[in-house]
Image (cartoon, rainbow, N blue to C red; front, side, top):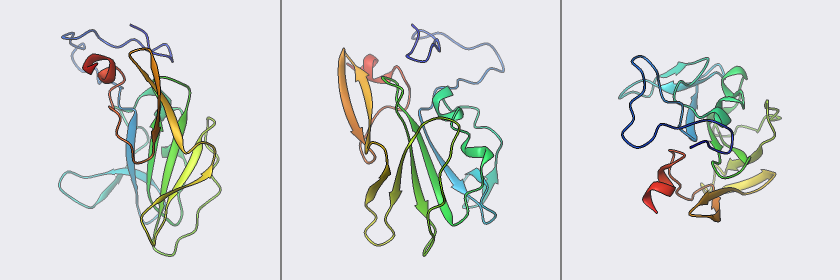
Length: 158
């Protein structure tokens, strides 16, 4: 079955060809190193490994281009793409005392920030939620809300 963006997911029980990595993760938490480069944390470590591309990120996340940008004064960037709509969102966590950069990504995106004082997530630009679909219903999922990261998981669970 094809998703909203035309990607085709394997059916339940299907295996991918050897060496192929499933690009299905709709929420990716990037750590930002001291030089402002996006990456992932090394296994069981706080060390950040800068990357050019997250192999398991869904196309909607990859299309944002988070890894191509510098993120001065930012500690983390969470990139989210909805499976039931074209909604995309980034949640920025500034370093202590850090200021938000001007966010210009490769696709339209809503921007939220984590407040240093209360840890709350506040809207900077765009929607404070993404629209997801499951079982022919549309749901608004906020930044702290839980949604399956695999694009077919919600329908499978229903």
